Image (cartoon, one colour):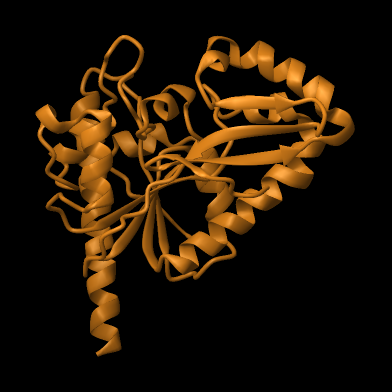
Length: 268
């Protein structure tokens, strides 16, 4: 897999060489991605080379600050967000993703609703034009865009997924954490948490409901980097979902600040 070129701001293209499995992968992708296949530059199959080119996303600040670097770790890009040019864009019905107001309410950044459109959000987070305790890095563990994370394995099959996609994702994640000097990681997906954390968890929503802080240590990365798990970005299955999501993110924010402060104290 090779980085090809930047398409727009945070979007760039990669490709997979598919070999003999090209035809079956192409058929499954066409069926499962459906209406998203019409998006410009999203996914293109090349019959001669037997490869698939696709657009993915990653947002790393282009302006350096002295704030601690915190990674917001997601499963994989959603085709609609790539088309809109920004992580977690409003859905096709123009309904805003809960991520933005919840993170604001929990004190992670101050971005008013009037500026939460894809173009302005991209500029704000690339240039760190927000007040908040951390410099935020938006990262997808898997690069291939699908409406649901489990579609990736279903499209590419177990062999290609385990022999190509998974090892590349793991290596790129480790390299990125090291190169960007990440101090803490926040995940919004249990499967991704279990991939990058030493300790695995099963049922966790009830634990979050009870106010528990779900925290692990990095696997195959610096073990001093804490990894936290919170509610999925679109979760709303409780009458007090807004409060529950906000409280979880507030606890994670406080825990990260405490750990960073302790690390500074121990180093002086």
